[in-house]
Length: 333
Image (cartoon, rainbow, N blue to C red; front, side, top):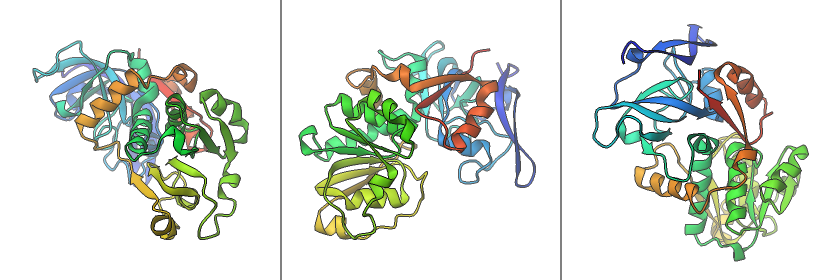
């Protein structure tokens, strides 16, 4: 198979600090070592992929490079007994699409320890509507539940609610019986958020109102934050006594301009969510739930689909904050 040629997005650095993107050809023989070769059928576009495609040094440092932190497809070859040709599998996180050529190519070669068999109840396409975003959202919901946040506890807030993680978190929480308040800077997306199950939609300005104070009125029993920065600080200040906030993103800022009052006066918990190096045991648990009791009936309506040659436009739109929900990348010829 080493001479097999396939299509991929290739990010290059012709001059230091200058990055270009094109759809070109690569060989399986050019891929790094690994026990499993996977024919990729679907991937998805995440914010991290958009950063990788523009040469962001915090994501990818070696070029030429193929982004794509998500991949779903069939095993083409395997040197381990745990996986056989034809097995339908998912790979998300780890080093995929960062230092290792990722899902924006029709083939990947990865360590067997990164590969998860597709759970019954999900198609390959559905798994990539979810992808890293859905996995991260589900981890966030699971951590809230484990921390004791129940539907009867009160409102649960989701920030950045029109994005990939946020939109799926809204759907998962609503399906589990929570009253979800969705916060978004996109006023025109209120109906979209309500269609996902949000009981109430507030603007970013509403969320931040009064956030200059050390503490705000207690409102949130729990929250899923994907924004960071001043938004996360405001959420913490407005969380009820004993409430829990999960943090999984920093599209707003990596800085947290907060004080200790929510923690020492209200006992608020702040939990970090890592979907990249999460061990395989929790991964299997979460993906099985996403395929079963947490499977969303709204999945199809959350996603648009594009091919490799349409990716450039989608990346630019994402970088300018113009996408909502999920973008599935079809790697078919």
